[in-house]
Picture 1 (tube, helix red, strand yellow):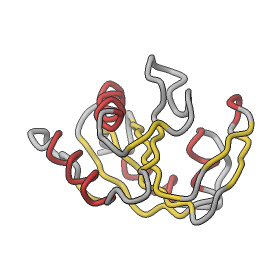
Picture 2: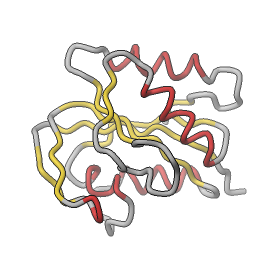
Picture 3: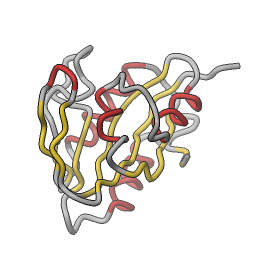
Amino acid sequence: MRSSGAYVLIVHLPAPVTLRVGSLGPQSFKEGHYLYCGSAQAGLMSRLARHMRVDKRRHWHIDHLTCHGGTVGALAFEGRKETECLLASTLAAVPGVLPAVQGFGSSDCGCLTHLFLVKDGVPLSIVLDFLRSSFSERPRGGQSI
């Protein structure tokens, strides 16, 4: 059975880079950890496996970033498309987590962005623990992948 779900993909960029991101055009990315909120209506694990590959056709906005940075891992959550947006709004409220690129991954919803940069000096583990605790009542509430 192919399961649906939402996820937060963790990508590390070792150096600053400017990338052309589909219709968003050229975008500058700082060095650091990025958190991307996404969802899969079927095949959550295969979607995450695809995101973690470097050699792939660039289809989604996040593909442009994962082809240049290292995918560190992901957190998986029970839910559908609306959970993806709930994850994004939760991250937007975390001190030290900044919206990275307006419209990134959010062209099909009303969110400002689904991509966030964790500021230097903010422990990534604290941000991920906060996300897990915010969704702990859900099955697969932040399962590490």
